[in-house]
Image (tube, rainbow, N blue to C red):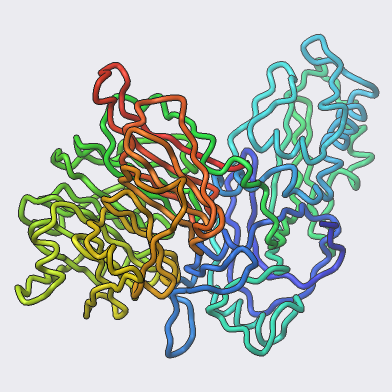
Length: 590
């Protein structure tokens, strides 16, 4: 992708700071053209941005499903946040198009010092020449991640701040009305979200402050006088390009601050490949020693949560890099949990009590008590609809983010009797919660948010006696997968109404216990207890097997992000070797 000189852009304010905090966006009344030639330009995957506002698209950017009001067409989510973790995750060599005016950051600072002292200087016995005066893509990434370029005594602060994009419906409507990016048609609606080619501009996007304490000697003001003569080059504000440089100087310190715009150019370019899909896993070794029962991942992969049979709930907000125990519920061998598309809403259950979090797992409340049974939970990606299938008991449904609950306990209901009779079960929901599937003795589906339930149909009647263990549902709900006790994988392409067995010798007759799929259903991962990881990258047409060479292999649960880039799985300890503990394993495509 080449850099952009002049283009329309969603206007904003604020920015990213090193050594200072940054606000990122505010509402504007129109989408106007900007001079972006001096801006830091960074590619940002449009699918990742859309996940944050409840819009799911396929790999080509085509709209699949979204959370919107069918009356006025507005999205339910009218703002989004981009924190530093998310920003740094996108700050890669492939994503940075140009560093803009920041290319002179170090050379300008060196010039300022040499002008002050009338020549080159040495710091710590070394010629002061930060990165040879070069500030390029690599330097931007390194500085943002705390690299000091081997300058002795140099301290680089952490990148900090939170970005907020507000009034999204208003911005998208203006983009539809005026089509400033030439990427919308008469059929485009707000519910389609951001589009490939959209640009989000933050005028005060990146602020970097460089500072050095100096000691020119008693009464020596020559350096101050030298800089005063060139002050016009040290302090300026370019209204056209929105680049600002301020320099303060005296006999004890020189501080120079650069502020340049950041333009996020939305694209479908993925800064990773699927060559190692489901083949590379990292053991979170500091969490070893517990039997983890269930895991869940947000749509973009940033938020990940796991629960052990001890009831310990661990959360990560940086794509699985670091983990913190956030809560503990009473222990149980059947602990279960799930999280919403943005990670904000989370639900956990131990067979007796239901706990709900509405702040990314930071705090939890006990919202519901039930009988002591084996349970499985699932939550619609929008967080509003939560299902708990309680084996030997019944099906519990909440349609208000876990505040209130109702139970399906009609003894005349086939679904009720199936759950009552069968000791294991699983449940899957589409993004909006409209399409719901329960896998127990049989598979049952609902197309009206759990109000009415119907039994599935198998293309092969001889498979009707399968006992079902797990189910995975795509965001739209049309593509679904289920694993059966007989060791086979089944697929539905009509919202769970009819199912057919995937006849592939690689995946037949295995002791499966967990399954997950991507937003479209293209990528699938299935766990075999004490065995292999099976995966498909083409909707279940072809399969491969990967044998992990670490850990207990006593797999229990797997989850993945909407684009399948991030996966999380958990294990119990090895049943025969106590020294091989249970753990969490993350997978990130690069």
